[in-house]
Image 1 (cartoon, one colour):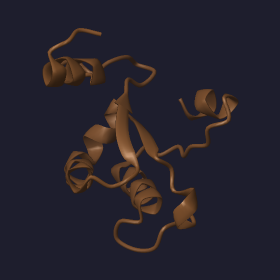
Image 2: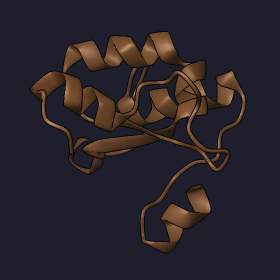
Image 3: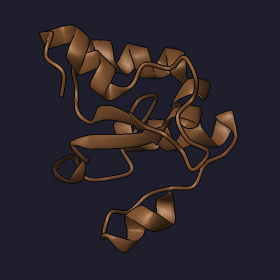
Image 4: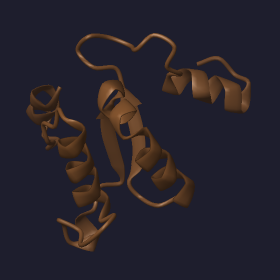
Length: 100
């Protein structure tokens, strides 16, 4: 996934274990220490695969409740959508009552 995004000019980090995912998340958000980037370069959107997000679910939820940037968007990984996981489209449909 990181390679695919990199081909479009979007940088990313490969993280597989919970510790690696949490370290990358904290580095990007500045949670638990200093930002790895200057404040004006903090991304506005953080894209996580569903499987990565599932490993840091509590930290992700806490971050989203603060309403800070970056906003977090979960996408299916190369293995496809995780069964039972609500998609972004499902969340929008529930929030506004319109199918997109």
